[in-house]
Length: 133
Image (tube, rainbow, N blue to C red):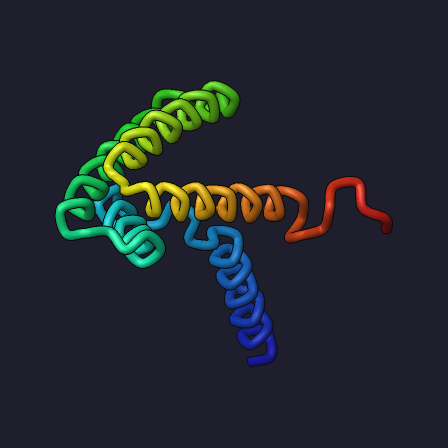
């Protein structure tokens, strides 16, 4: 009986750890990610219904192309990153073209926030690179 509890505990720990590592990053289909990002941008930028439709189409195309790029790149992470950065730049320009001047400012601020968050995540959760230990 004791072994059963130990095995269950270990299994639970492994499942919890695996779930935490996944973190929901790239979770969902391209459609789900496009819908979620459109909702976020609608909230941040106050998009009109017409803008929402166009932004969602751009994001859906981007997510679909990124999924294909991931598959095509295989283990070549550098090539994948280059392709994805190119896709993001192109699509951000398309989105920016749909926005009013005030929305463009808010979009730029939002992109800066995301860039900072990604850098913090890469540096170990907010610890500045080269920070003292």
